[in-house]
Length: 281
Ligand SMILES: [Zn+2]
Ligand SMILES: [Zn+2]
Image (cartoon, rainbow, N blue to C red; front, side, top):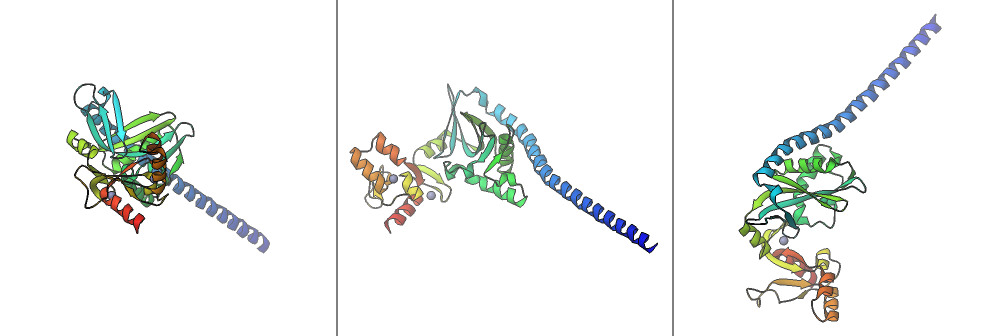
């Protein structure tokens, strides 16, 4: 009898353990799905919310009536060109791209070829992702499908209070933009001309440096005009590295070859002087 009761006890224990295990597994399953569902429901809420805003945006600006668009990473301005009359300009953030070759989404902050000016705003999205344990917002390259691009873009649009979104196609890549505000022609011209916004110094005077000075690839600092005392009003800050100088001397001047090697970039004047002091100290 004692033996039997021991067996019953043992069976109860096994039963108990098994049930416990099942309940733990079940809880884990529920929790995992909750997280998964959490992101999916958050994303689809954003898509729904933003698609209403997007319809208004497309109608308000009559975006489909513009035949051509153009964007300038160096000043962060997106332009819709009108066949007749006024062009439209927006300040934009490059959100990322979806590749139909690899079915992957790549956040622009993970893309080294995208300038900081047009991606710095996404830091807020990343922080939101980290806080909420949404790995999709904190992983640079993720697998996805045709909806992933709009999902990520809608989330970014919501978090960054964008006024609209736009997608362009380049071969197998769909590139997604959000517009943060409209620019007037004057603001656009100012950006195009002298003043430049900088994600470190907000705004400054325009300056030009070769890509190697930005990437710190090569030393040296050669200036077109000695910056500081002797510059005339129309002289620009322009500088390049030792290697660019060698190519320039070889070519005899700045021409297509030497310009292609230098890949001149726009920076603000404060960045220019920071680079200068870094190179000449
Ligand atoms: Zn260079
Ligand atoms: Zn700067």
